[in-house]
Length: 266
Ligand code: VGL
Ligand code: ZN
Image (cartoon, rainbow, N blue to C red; front, side, top):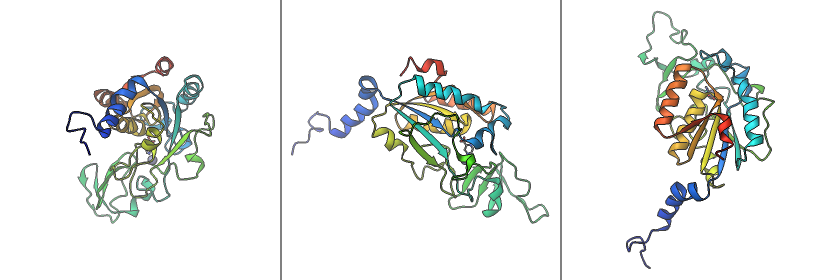
């Protein structure tokens, strides 16, 4: 057997890596639109972005996304679902199901009451006893599997051929990114679905800008996709956090565009 790598030729693994990371992106770019969590609970339901500190109108993105689906020739379209079991760790309603050891970075003190978690509120960050220790932002109960709140917005144009990804299905672990859970212990099938269809470029939009949209874009960059975030097709929880998310994404070479620019890119 000849060892081509040692004699100066490139091996198959090296060729594949060059193909994925450099050659295909130039010679054979293929684009996917990833629509993150455009579900009723984030629009009109329990975790309505309209009622969050940023005061953005989540439903405004629906016609924008429909236009993108209709007018832009994406090779693939993917819809992600936040898809939690009833006893999910992120629900404030479930805080007594597990032992809390810290709140917002400070040890939880039992100040005379025997209910030290009584004053924990939505958006507080609590630490649950491990192992593994879980640091978790608390949210109201949302997107329970098969509930109407977990359904996609009814105006959204969903093709039956679209890829569907369900995340946050493990009770003990939240999942903001559509690629990995928050501890990167388990991957969803999204990377495999995209790579097996030779997708090189991902266009990401949806809800919430500063939570699941940003987490998905950061993982897409890390997984080697050319990553474009569609600004006006995404709405978020907190203006400050949205601004920090954009800075972080740009520093990692994500491209942030408006929806009317996408047609000339794909
Ligand atoms: C999300 C909070 C909790 C999101 C999901 O889709 O951005 N946010 N779960
Ligand atoms: Zn969630």
